[in-house]
Length: 135
Ligand code: ZN
Image (cartoon, rainbow, N blue to C red; front, top):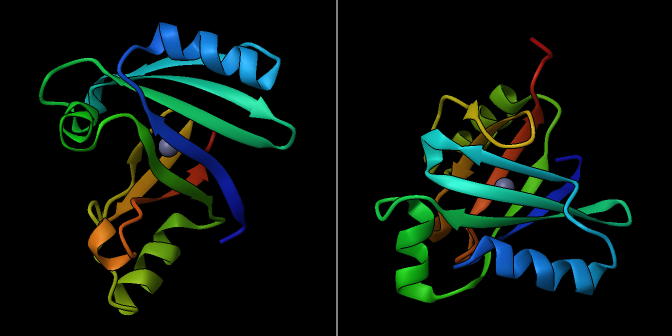
């Protein structure tokens, strides 16, 4: 694990939350992106060297919609930057973690991503992400 890449926050209304985080962080989102396969619309903010990702559901069966229903708005996941996501998945499986998608998928912000089930990580949904090679 290289560093915390970003912290993900589940929100009900992306526009409203963008206004809040723009005021909080003193700068607007630098990127908005929809990830259709995940049923989310995202906005990314910078706080110095760190990033915050806001996630809004785009459909009722989106994982974010389900999360909001159960737990309401708030911290949703921590993402770690990794150099080699395939090697890291293999290592974590070996350590007994539950990897939700063993084949990395394309996430927001040009990343390859994989998630660990929170039941194996003390309730924290962990995202691994690796900068995707340029196409
Ligand atoms: Zn994320």
